[in-house]
Image 1: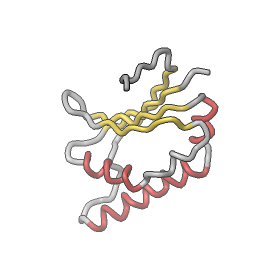
Image 2: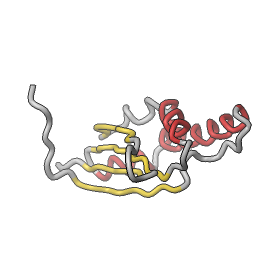
Image 3: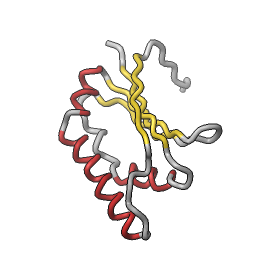
Image 4: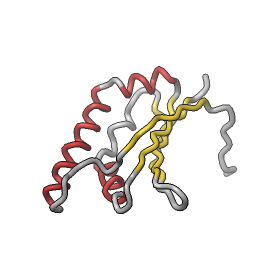
Length: 117
């Protein structure tokens, strides 16, 4: 079976990167125990873009869909919304989303190389 990779491409306004990163840190642990989950990375842009990439790798498309349609996914995103509201009140801001747009890119892994040793 071939792994499936999903990128959630998040457009993040200038100055909101640390807010986004903090919210992801607070959600840590929700995806790791999911059936078929293999890997997660939050990728910060370093040049030429305002887009963060949320990289996840799954055993199958079915496993990814089960996660997206499951309770832990909903719980994690509800917690992010609650944290956004709290962040706004604590810092005098509006407490809105740290990202202004999101799109999902999906790929099948056809080659995977890891470092030796």
